[in-house]
Image (cartoon, rainbow, N blue to C red; front, side, top):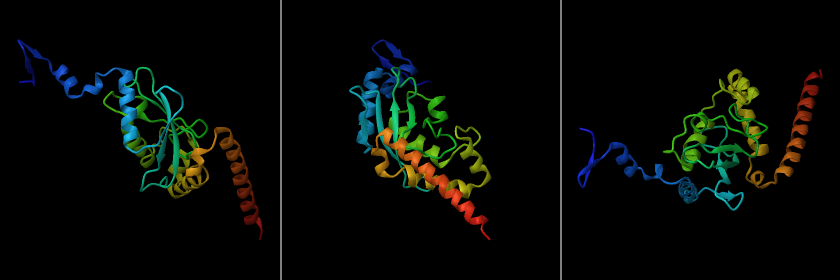
Length: 209
């Protein structure tokens, strides 16, 4: 017999029982946003509000252990839609990361569980403790936003891991997440020019007898 609760002279349906057991799915979007954000802050994540509201903010995210991203630190922009938690948050990397499922220029994330299978049962802590670490631990080169990274990963995993570490060193140090966007852009252009120049020098050196 399905679980029911007698209340006076009527039964509470299983769906109402579910809402009583999991009240966060029934809370208003504004209260849920506030609750999830406070829960994220209490989980020792550094959160920086973008404006006076609670819908846009930055979160400091560390690369997971046992991955080439370990040691990297990223500033993640989170935007909660008006209908959150019934619609998924928008997630993007501010400083660069080399990953098949992250657009290198915009930082947007191709994350199936967020973009397609989001549920009100998930919260912001899930995003940073489960979804993003899983994304970095198990990239999916068959569904890329960065085709070069996907191709390199499938062709030469060791070379891919090395490129990831190079990006971590150039763009994902603790001091990088505090840089202003315009400063970061000019620094990236300079770093990429230097990187290309070093490649040219290496090629020229190999050409010498």
